[in-house]
Image (cartoon, rainbow over all chains, first blue to last red; front, side):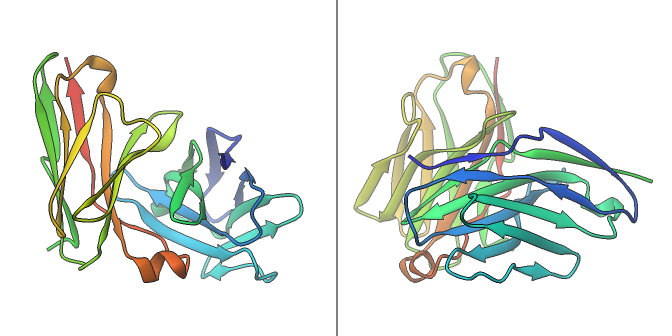
Length: 112
Length: 116
C-alpha cells in the first residue's frame, strides 16, 4: 500500500520569510500524482499545488513551489514571502490509480 | 452555493444513537467519497462509490454504512455511534476523466461529529 509521511507535525515561520514543509512517500508505481492541500480554520480543503510524476520540472503556483525528487520519493512544499493567511494545516497527498493517500499533516503557524 | 454540500456542519450525538451525515453535489461527478480526519492521522477513506450502483469499502469502513441515493447524493451512517467515531468527516467528489488525468477531488466543508 502507498504511504505518505509528513515528519513535521508543526512548523512556524516569520511573516515574509520562507518555509519548507517536507513530505516523503512510498510507491512501486511509475505513474502517479502528488498534491499539497491547505486546510485553514474554515476546514475547507484547498488545493495548493499539483505535480505530475512524469514531469521533471517542479510545479510552481505564485509563492508556492515544490521540490520533487522522484528517485528519493520526496515532495516538499516551499512557501515564499509567508503571509498571515498561509497559517493552516497542510496535507501532502499521493494519487495513484483511483485513490488518494494523505499524510498526517503539518500545522503551519505564521508569526507576525 | 457550494459545489459539494455537507450537512450538518456540526453535530453532537450520544453513544448508541444512529446518525446520518449527508452529502450532495452539483458538480455532475459520478464518483463520491467519504473520508474521516483525525488529529495526527490525516484523512482516511471510509467508503467510496463510482456510480449509483457501486459501493466500495475503504480503509476504515467498520461501524459505518453508506447509501448512494442518486448520482448527486451520498450519505454516511453510523448505526450505533461510539466516542471513537468523534472526528471531522469529509465528502469528496470526482469523475472518471478527472481521475484518469490525475486531478484532485472537490471537497465539501466537512461535518464535525462529536459522540458523547
